[in-house]
Amino acid sequence: MIKAIVGANWGDEGKGKITDMLAKEADIVVRFQGGANAGHTIVNNYGKFALHTLPSGVFYSHIVSVIGNGVALNIPVLFKELNELTSKGVPMPKILISDRAQMVMPYHILFDKYEEERLGGKSFGSTKSGIAPFYSDKYAKTGFQVHELFDDDALRTKLAEVCDTKNVLLEHLYHKPLLDPEELYAELMEYKKMVEPYVCDTALYLWNALKEGKEILLEGQLGTLKDPDHGIYPMVTSSSTLASYGAIGAGVPPYEIKKIITVNKAYSSAVGAGEFVSEIFGDEAEELRRRGGDGGEYGATTGRPRRVGWYDCVASKYGCRLQGTTDVAFTVLDVLGYLDEIPVCVAYDIDGEITKEFPTTCLLAKAKPVIEKLPGWKCDIRGIKNYEELPENCRRYIEFIEKEIGFPITMISNGPGRDDIIYRESPIKAGF
Ligand code: GDP
Image: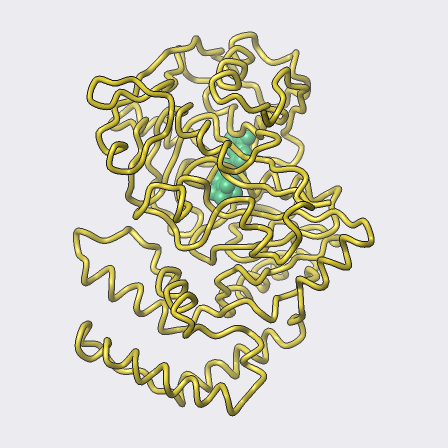
């Protein structure tokens, strides 16, 4: 069976920790979308790691880590990450790379950078990892799948054609140095050497694993609000962040995805530009940012300070619904222990109309948060293992949010480590 671990919001909800934790009982962890533009932070016995391309199961020797066809595969970044792991004493993980995964080409990163420069103040706040140019090429059908590295003549011909068109833009739109197909070819041959031992038909591998009764985790990147269809378009990412896309990006039957664990953080954070109704500013924000996550709310890939805000029931209810949530994992709750009162966004006020349904981007820009304050618990909840042992106000906070979003909170994370987790029976049933 398959479990998907996905985010309800803007990303950075703590999916890496939950995946790492669930991987203990699983056989395979698959990345199915996104690229090296975001990252997961994982704290375990080996130390603290920021993973960008590798699935979060890489720390277990029993896990096979799969880079699915839906991923934007940056080969040098992947291998740099593998080296980092092994140099810190982590055994070399078993990895498989889809022969249909498309490669982030060196020029995708250049185009990302040039376009953000060209847009100036109107830029998307891209991490300049080449993701938007990569997916543009994928859907314009000018991208390169990994297996193309192994067909020399076809590769050279296609490279020459692609360079011809890219060079028109480089010369006339961006006024930058032109691409040389020979240089690119040489770089791709380096990529080929790196990936060769790991490339296979991963969808077939997963099909066979399912037949053998293996447990597979699909690890999402970012969250619902960054989905190109259902998110805060255009301030979204370029590949779908929804669990349902896991079926496509991993090449598995959709009906096999039996559990969808949507990770919600106990407050909100976002990296990059875009609508964020419950955002806070000034000293209040600085304090939450400093205390947030594990060592502050700063991007795992970029180190950029994250924007922070209070928990947004409207966005999270929507985020959980679009994911098809069966379970909510409620994370980073320990961080809120310093507050006397905890503000929660329970509705939006849009031109005087109060709504609990997440609107389209144009309306979102006008939305003001309707805030309700709950009493804080004013203590450290790390180390607690049973739900009943949590302070009463902490349980009230969880139960209030659960009722607002209408999805069962069955896991509560009260620290960054693998074992900082409280399981709970929820009175709410997922679905209709
Ligand atoms: P992801 O992209 O969804 O995996 O999230 P990130 O890794 O970017 O951000 C989550 C951050 O919160 C990381 O630094 C985690 O180590 C940390 N974290 C995860 N769960 C908890 C928790 O329950 N408490 C605390 N304090 N930190 C947590």
